[in-house]
Amino acid sequence: MMPSTENVASAPRMPAEEDCEMALVHAAKAGDMDAFGQLVRRNQVMAFRVAQHITGSPEDAEEVVQEAFLKAFRNLERFEERSRFSTWVTRITVNTALMRLRQRRGHETVAFRQADADDPSALPQEVADWRPDPEQIYTRRELRAILERALADMPQHYSTVFLLRDVEGFSTSETAEALGISITATKARLLRARLQLRERLSAYFRDENSVGRLKAKTMRSGL
Image (tube, rainbow, N blue to C red; front, side):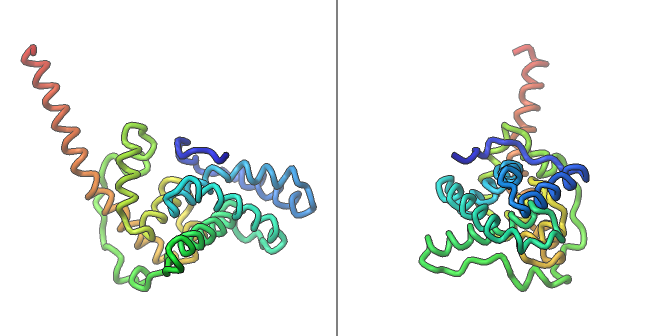
């Protein structure tokens, strides 16, 4: 049984972790099954979250992750090590999840590539800072469900970029590679995702602030 999405967002990976990951890759390529098992355990939670986000189904996500790691094992010799293993296996997971969606929707076209997002002129010139930011929100248990609903309502090619970049801690270039899109498109979609989340969540924070002011007023009045 795959892990649930209750796990907190992945911490940023340190160089020592990347060295360890690559050592496991080398061992796995040499036939060490335990090393490949460790690679699976290190990445299965993240892969499951990504698969569930795309498919919208824990059952489909579980099958997608199993299939993705099987593909990774069968094609391990083709992994050229120009990126992290986690980035490579995430791309396999994304493609496998999209294929599952196509099958479920009767071969309807499902893709992350959209021409408008590759146009540099489409990039917002400035995005005002706001607090709390999306990543901070995601780690707060009481707001998790609210953010998940907001992400579910967002176009998938925006929300998945946000998930990889701001929740899973991928760099911009790693996110672009995992999704098979350009860095320009990744930046554009990430900015749009953050703006859309800000719009969707602003109502919640207004309500939260109103409740806080009401509580303070009540306490001052002695009620």
